[in-house]
Length: 332
Image (cartoon, rainbow, N blue to C red; front, top):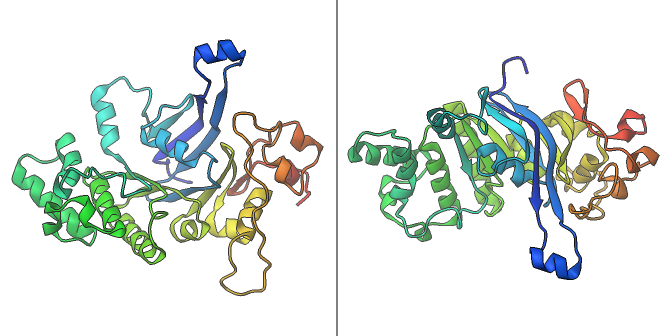
């Protein structure tokens, strides 16, 4: 990327202590247990770009999203937004300005809206929190604008979340996210809880809003068809690590990492080219006790001796980055 990126994640890691209580460990003579949810994840997102993270459930995508948006402190590494480290800055005002520029759209619109608040109060809350309006009339006007922007009526602000469908609730979530005038949106599976027909409407709305307001997206999904429609670049995650990063069309045209190939082989062939469809084989190993070396090697058809010993580094090949011993050895 020629210009300086808006978002940079460098060697992000997150470890959770999943040990039993102290007394249980003493009685059962058990040791502490740690779950390495994310390990040394690095990526950069340019301004106005959509960067997607994909992978099976349990790969660490949502944990990365929460660290990037500021909901979960990293165990190691750093996240910077416009060259400001969001976890190390001691200036409260600077941190507040930074948080205004970042918002998140959550997976479940049924759970992410307060059922006891009217919609107008839900959308107005960030406006008031960041001091973006001077009086109640200005707040109400802004809320009405945001509801129109996402395809709803200003009169809907007087209703409660339970009076809306799933797609309408996600529109409310988008309006709330836009209410603080952010530059960067983290979208954690924003359409996975919706019907397929509604998914397309929400995705098209997000694309239109990105063009209109020059937004930058980090898009988390397990649906490859969705990320192909939304993202300029894709990062593929497996068991807490990024195994491949590439421009979207390049990734779909010629995937390099065996795990990426496995995911794409499982996608239905809607163009009816005659390509055989293969189901994803095996399961993600236990992250508490992952296999040595490359975590994918127990499921990999190309695994050889180095794969069982050494974790492969993420190596650049032009615009693509791949972490695979088989690729480096020319076995693909």
